[in-house]
Image (cartoon, rainbow, N blue to C red; front, top):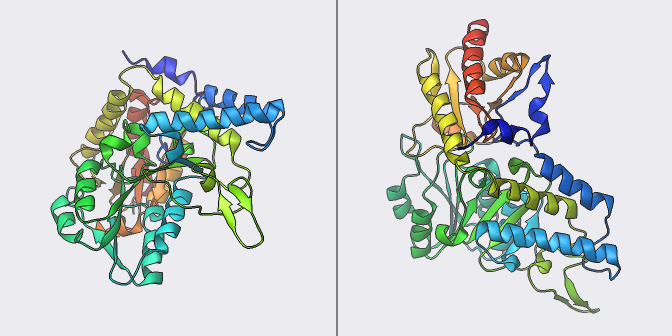
Length: 398
């Protein structure tokens, strides 16, 4: 049985206070709290550190082993091979590196498709390379419930699509996309599928072979790892995106040959402590007690049921499967004001457009409130949020 109280003990921040009240942290879709084992792993590598790959002394070899062990751990978590994993600074970096590679191949008449629910980081880079190259930028629509409309996608993913990009799960609606179905449609049309896993990997079991995607990117900080680290899986490794030390084989006056993947994709001194912390965060997820995903689903269901019983609150979307977060609006109340007042009660939620303006505007909204529980949250915290909303909404309703 899942014991949330024992799990909470490994996240020191959860015992803290804000404004003299116990912290109720429900903004995990933005950044998750760091478990103690991650702190410990990062501290160990920082207390005895050296640059990796190019040193033959003992400390360098220790750090190189730790760094490459982290890559192996990430690969194993995704069901991939180590040479298919490129460390990045996060999902945004991974998308941009992939877009830079695709830009060199796009021609007028080619198509790049994204879904309507995408985070700006998985929308703007593809939009911009289409504007630069004359390729067509296609937006795949959603159903009224907030699911990806696969029937419409099949029509839009016609021959000529070079790549489709989709979130594993939405950072606004919580919609879990049917990635294998989208992969089948994309591959049938001759394209590649890029999956933004920044939200999905936090709540779903990820097997890139079962998903049948060509790329899968995610960020460490949403898993409780340090800021500034992420990873990109590529079924077939891409050419170098950046140039410098660490990724070359031989440099001559008139040409350069490059190292094999994955080193060819990581120029300069890498974020060694970040990579080690990312591996530790994934290990925490891997060793969580059985039932943690059902626990998260139950928290989200409790939240949605409570919100739908309240007057003047409108939950956005009702997808086939929701995971990780949901968003809602309130009649006559600014999401910003509501979030500020909830913060005074010690409750952390997110307000704004959530880097998803095309999605929110398609729903007739500019801003919304978002709640995103994690495995370490409790039913009592969900109830405290609902009670808090009942208290603050009358104070900020116009």
